[in-house]
Image (cartoon, rainbow, N blue to C red; front, side, top):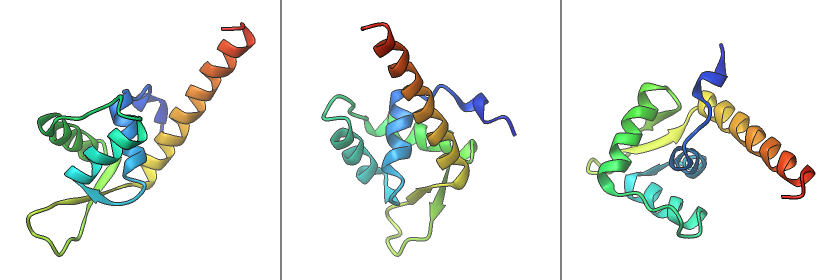
Amino acid sequence: MNLNKYLPLTETTYYILVALLESGHGYYIMQKVEELSGGRVRIAAGTMYGAIENLLEQKLIQPMPSSDKRRKVYQITELGKEVLHLEAERLRHLIEVAENHNL
């Protein structure tokens, strides 16, 4: 399978996948993304649920059983972890190029 079709990830998608290395519901994801990004990325509720639907379709995340019927809980899939790893490698390469050119 060609995983490069998923790349590059948007900054928001990248943070959502990182946040879901620990399972959580939408509000948790929104808070975690803001925390991980140092406040630079804030996700509105409508954007959050659109992103979740997209990531579910791509099989990068999956729903998890939850005792709270009001909140849907999600977790990154193995495919999502592979894509996240590839994106991290891609970003590392970009940084290496910039550092090699004294940027």
